[in-house]
Amino acid sequence: MDAPNALETARGQVRAACERLKLPPDVYEILKEPLRVLEVNIPIRMDDGRIRNFRAFRAQHNDALGPTKGGIRYHPDVTLEEVKALAMWMTFKNALANITYGGAKGGVICDPRSLSEGELERLSRGYIAAIARIVGPEQDIPAPDVYTNPKIMAWMMDEFSRLRGFYTPGVITGKPTTIGGSAGRDTATARGCAFVVREVARERGVELRGARVAVQGFGNAGAHVVAFLSEMGARVIAISDSRGAVFAEDGISPGAAIRHKQETGSVVDLEGTRPIGQEELLTLPCEILVPAALENAINADVAHRVRARIVAEAANGPTTPQADEILFRRGVTVIPDILANAGGVVVSYFEWVQNLQHYYWSEDEVTRRLEQVLVRAATNVLRLAAMDQISLRDAAYVIAVKRVADAMRDRGWY
Ligand code: NAD
Image: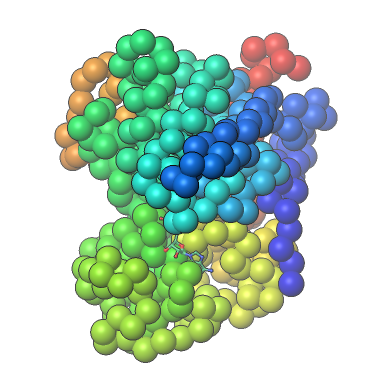
């Protein structure tokens, strides 16, 4: 089974785009490493009175196009390498969406489910204080990622404001709307994914009405993707989370699934469904497959058996490079993560803009602008892919790497 290191995957994607663009080797030399990495240890007083030291990271990959931006992941398996890869992906995701940001990412090695609310708050405040010297509205703006949420963003904004001495909402996005969060941020990743799926399906001749959809992962991204694609007329036949997968030929009601998950903590045993294997979900006959959990879900072995026509990467890095090639050869359209899940960072960007202007938009306004940004990005990717007969991922990286390289050239970096 291939489960490559995410950093090697990210570097390979960037290297391939640099070669395709015939850029001087200096460009890849700059892009292969983050510009800055901070590793910190955060001593936290636990509820039992003892001190525990948590290791954490912040990687700022590239700021040629603007201040760096990217989420903070809380996970027991987070590594510096993974954070560097995720930061790199953010640079190109932002460039592809054409928003004025570079890329960054943060990670804290912890299992948030085993921490009390007080411990989680002290750790979150401790993390932002430890990296405060390199973040800020003009420098680097964090956001939520896996196992972090608006409440954690609120603690971090408060702590940063305390250190600065004044209210600084623009330091972080994904905040609750009571303290400078944007309308529509919580559903933005999924909404964006649905817009992009709609554009790609239309171009590839896949009718969305009645299309069968399977979604792996039922968290912030996955659960809302289920809701939006259902609204567009698709039929979601399978969903899963870390505990298991379920199937219903006639379709799963998004509302019922969300309620069941809230009540029981899982989608397993959802009424009207039957259990299936987690991997079986990835190889079901369907039109659209949405991996919305973690990295490397679709490896070479799975890729040979995928029966979907379109794979929409709501998660970051769910397809291994080998699997990517296999899917391309088999004629399966993969919508790359830097396009499929860009909705989150685009609305994060809108949140930051609203914070800087102290002027807030309605949810309709946010959705309208999000659609505009993503339809433009998707159209550019589809056009280049058709012209050069390349995958949507290769096309997306060519567009994004060119934007970053042009900015670095004009700033005199090479
Ligand atoms: P989340 O923590 O809200 O949800 C993750 C879900 O995946 C959970 O339902 C979990 O049970 C499930 N899961 C974990 N392991 C699984 C497995 N082996 N099989 C099936 N399901 C499994 O996280 P999220 O915010 O929804 O993020 C999911 C992915 O989307 C990540 O790759 C993240 O980087 C990416 N993403 C999220 C956002 C966002 O705004 N939330 C934006 C861009 C990208």
